[in-house]
Amino acid sequence: MAKQLAFYFDASTCIDCKTCQIACKDKNNNPLGLNYRRVVNYGAGSWIPDAVHKELFIPTNFFAYNVSSACMHCEEPICVEVCPTGAMHKRDDGIVLVDDSKCVGCRLCQQACPYGAPQYNEAKGVMTKCDLCADLLEIGQETACVASCPQRALEVGELADLRKKYGSINAIEPLPKAIYTKPSIVITPHPRSQYSGKGTGKILNPMEV
Amino acid sequence: MGFQDWPLMIFSLLAQLATGSFVVLGIVRFSTNQKERETDYYRLLDRGWIGSFVIMVIALIVSLIHLGSPLNAPLTILNIGSAWLSREILFGLLFAFFAGLFTLFQWQRIGSRKLRDTCFVLGGLAGIALVYSMSMIYRYVETQPSWNTPWTTVMFFLTAGLLGNLAVAAVVSTNFLSSGDKTKTQDPWYRKVLRGTSIAALVFIGLDVLVYLLYILGLFYGVPAAQETAKLILGSFGILFSLRILFVLVGSMLGGLFLIRLLGNQNQKNLLVSMAYSAFAFVLAAEGISRFLFYSVKVRIGI
Picture (cartoon, helix red, strand yellow):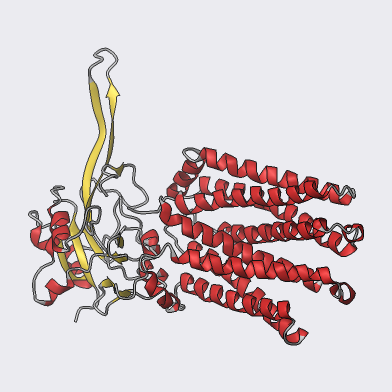
């Protein structure tokens, strides 16, 4: 049995098509505004105006890349720590789940999680989140996001195995530093990726995420 | 930011008002000597305790409003091991229980003095634990820099202290001054209580403004998310911030005038009562604004 299941994400191949986001929303039948997986665009750059040719602007320091982010099924999940009822819990295989028969809907986990993973379902009155498609994994299938990615930029596996295969980077901008929750994520950075906390860019689609 | 934060704001303010006034009334009680206790107007403290208990019960009911599934509320004390929110609810219930028990015993003069004292001390300790664990809920959340600071605890205790003292001063002044009896308005016990609570309230108000400004300053020198929070408070929410400071200054001036008139033996009754109540109202409004900013204006680390 797995000890800590985890996502792998390849920022160097992601093309921001957001198929993973839609596949996830479809699989979980989520209403408007609820997205367990979101693709965040991150970047920076500016223009230098030409003194003589007023219509001419020279681009400088441009970069942009994407991070597809869902629940990190953290090793030290802050959502589990702050939950008053114990509805938010971590399974033996590392998956962090909400037990909606216990959840009181106080939304403190939402305030605490730096990845925006627990999301409040107004109609149900409880928190909901990515469950790593545990039902699909059980019958030997891939998660909705992994199966749908045309770039093969996503993968699910045992954290230790993924680290052996892809290295152990777990924090690039705009994700927070890993110190808060020890996220179970393995990332192949984009060539222009910046280390969390040392970023010079900003989230380019804030309204969307 | 939406209406989901209002129940929390009202709960935290009322719970702090209840615990603060409960403890202040206790200090008044223990510093009153046996002879003064024989007097019938000493009974007005009982009314204060009833008020404090009722406010706490209202606070607990209001706190249920922000829950998506209130029927699961009994489960919220299950995670005592790691969640400060569970601890807060436990101490909140303990405070309400002991405060209620003590109020009943004291009001109806049931049981020995020792029994009542024990209930009071247990209630007071639960109240202090309540304010502490309430602040720790927010301090524990490392990813919200405007919560994750020791100032949170300091501010919560200051709110309890200043609202408690002002409430007791306002309630006692009404009783003191509404009595037509000339001898009663000169009664040393009333004067002592009013003097003590209004001086304490003024000290707490001073500390409260100072600490609030230090808290904002701390945000300015904090991590980027903290700086953004400070910019929002002073920028988009600048009007509320200014009103918060203005209200607390007006409140403290009214409190100061109240004290000067009291010491100067100028007993225009209605004026004094209005001053006490409006000082309480202004400071309550100021605390309400800063609590609103606390809950609604925050920038979390991460995405």
